[in-house]
Image 1 (cartoon, one colour):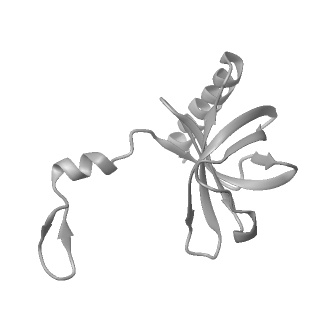
Image 2 (cartoon, rainbow, N blue to C red):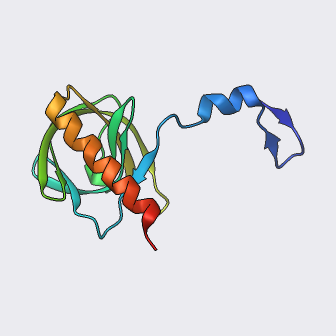
Length: 134
């Protein structure tokens, strides 16, 4: 990977850093925003939304609700303020969040133009609000 600087630290060279740099902005979702995801009738907190080359959501869940990486999920209902969007997705990762719960990244797939427009409009408006709050 990189060069050892000491027993406790390791420097990452530029080539390795490029491999782990995010290519998409993740829009954080605050609890004051009305964004929820329901999967098979169970509601989950949405922690972020990605909407560039790949479109996806991050949800927080309990251990008993964990999905498997690679699992395809049908019937995702995403509420964005007053819009209800029905989606399909593939679980990209599940990782502990340090509080006893888990973060799950889901890539949204098979999006029609209207759904994609609704998602991107929400992301653009929320992104603008995120950086203009006083």
